[in-house]
Image 1: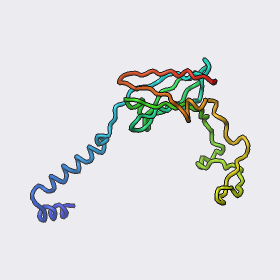
Image 2: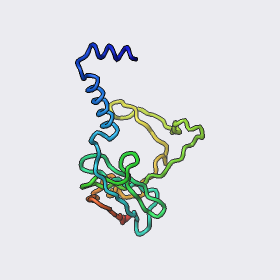
Image 3: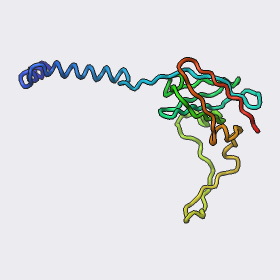
Image 4: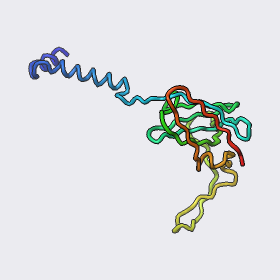
Length: 175
């Protein structure tokens, strides 16, 4: 190690090692602090009901005009709290499109924790789309979402998240 330092000192301009060390230290500090990618979040929570009854296991997604969305899942009383990327609580400030849908938690079928999901018994057949094979799923493979499309796939719900606490209750109707 000392031989390397002596070689560096003799083959480099004065102060090179000091400047290199300072640059490396600065890069490490920026890497640890997030490098300026910090965003302003505000806490968002509320209650989701349908026809006056609280909805459990409902996913609420706030999608901003720019940036990453925030999401939360309702508990048995319909209460949700949004989380943003990893473990940060809240949502970006600004206007959001809101999507609400049913998403039941699916426990793993196997105890071996292999991460491999159970396969579906499907059959393929010759489709009518230029000879491309199509998939025929067994009846009842997917459950129909009890939340009407106007709140999820065709949602027009919009909310503005402002600095400070935000509470948005969603009183959905099934009809």
